Amino acid sequence: MTQVHIDIVSDIACPWCAIGYKRLEKAMQELGDELEFDIQWRAFELNPDSTNDGEAILPALARKYGRSEDEMRANQAQMMDIASGLGLNFEKLQQRHTRNTFDAHRLLKWAAEQGKQTELKLAFFEAYFGRAENISNTEVLLAAVEQVGLDTDAAKAVLASNRYADDVRGEELRYQQAGVSSVPAYIINEKYLISGAQEPETLVEALREIAAEN
Image (cartoon, rainbow, N blue to C red; front, side):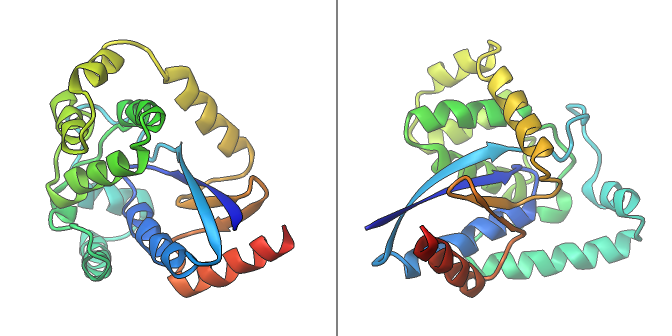
C-alpha cells in the first residue's frame, strides 16, 4: 500500500486546525483502502507573547483583525456549528482567553515518542475550545496527559525542564522560513503544501493526485 506522510503545521489555539484535522481524518478514512498515512504535528504559535492571564478572545480577535466584537462572535458561532457537525466540542469557544501554547507544543514532542501525539493534540483542543481551560497552565496540561493514558510524572518532569524547547523553536522557524504564515498547513511527503481547513472531498482528490505522482 502506498505510504503518505503528512506534517500538520498547527497551533492548539487555532480552531480551524481542529476542524481541519477532523476533515483530514474523514479524507484519510475514505482513502483507507488505497493509502497508508503517517501523521506528525508540527509547532506554530498564534499567540507567542500571551501572558498566563491572557485576554478575552472576542476583543482580542476584533483588535487583531480590525473587526467588531459582534462580527467576531458571529464568526465564532459559525465555527461552532461546523465543529459540532464534525463531532468536536467547541462549546466554550467564545469564553476562552488568548493563551501561550509553547509548553503544550513541548509536550506534543514528548507524546510523539510515546505514540500518542494525535490523541494528546485532540485532548488539548477539547480542553481549550470545549472547556475554555487555560492551556498554558501545568495542571490543565497534565490532566490532558492523564486523559490519554500517558505518564503524568514523566510529563511533569518535561515541563519542569527545558526539554524539547529547542525542537519547538527550531520547528517554528523552519516552517516560517518555508513560507508557512497561517495554519493549518499540511505538507505532504515533505514536498506538497495544502493550506487551510479544506473540505474532505478536496483533500481526497489532492491526496490521490499526490500519491499517484509518487
